[in-house]
Length: 261
Image (cartoon, rainbow, N blue to C red; front, side):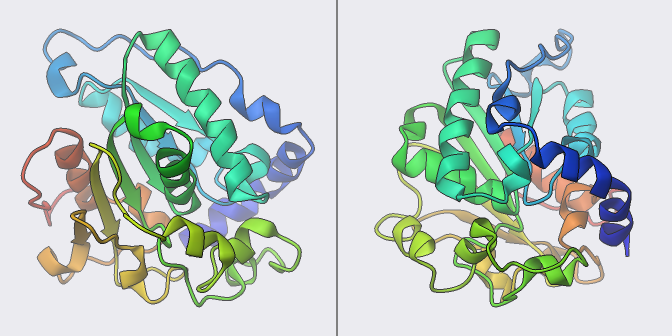
């Protein structure tokens, strides 16, 4: 499986990354390439792609490259300690990173594309850490917004146990973290909220738990493209899913392109 191949080749790097202080993940972002005049109108906001649990930044380069090709100013954020720690701590680190991106770009707002745990990190930031005034558009890809009954996420992907891994425990249905995150309004502020989910998600079960209430646009890939097979990691690699992301970031009607590569 593609997820296993990527994780197998990344394990040594992941272990090294875990030994780096969390502040290393919030180092000043590199300045993205300046969009050309022909494509710079794609969005006024820089886009931050937020990785998930064990999500090395290199795993998100395919979607980042697609976004850059469409004229978006793109940054990739790798969670501190690869997302093993408390999601609330990761959200605080992400808040600092957003401020760095805003400073570098001069933008008043950023748009966020969060994969898996990254969607929870960025949503906590928006809801509790002042991000509602700094985020224009929020797109989550396979984020367990209401939790997952896959009780041992790390074991499913062949990397041991969730025992003692705070973020894993926080993503389980019924966790105190999710009770806090899902209390009250799912979609606070003037942020445009979009979620994307897939029937073949092996980590988010039930798959509808990747959705939000309170006016969010919730997209199930197979509702438009029933023959499209997309797994959890595939959400950041799949062409059809990317067309949804691009449309959401452009405030366009959501019409997934089932034939996109």
